[in-house]
Amino acid sequence: MSLDNYLNFVLSLVFVLGLIALAAWGYRRFFMWQSVAARLGLATNRLRVAEVRGIGARRGLVLAQCDGVE
Image (cartoon, rainbow, N blue to C red):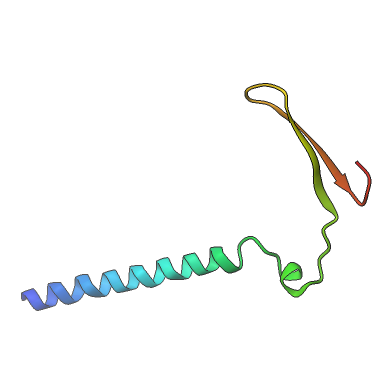
């Protein structure tokens, strides 16, 4: 095998890995944190965090609210 074959292999590998990285970035950017209903505007935000308090260095207390009930 000549140097051209090795160079072609390396460039092809870099191109394919770049395409995989681009696809992973696009998936995380546009689809991972949103559900289908949220993207279509069908979902409502029923659950929310009302308050967060630190109890200790490694513990915390979270007060959640769902449909107006804490």
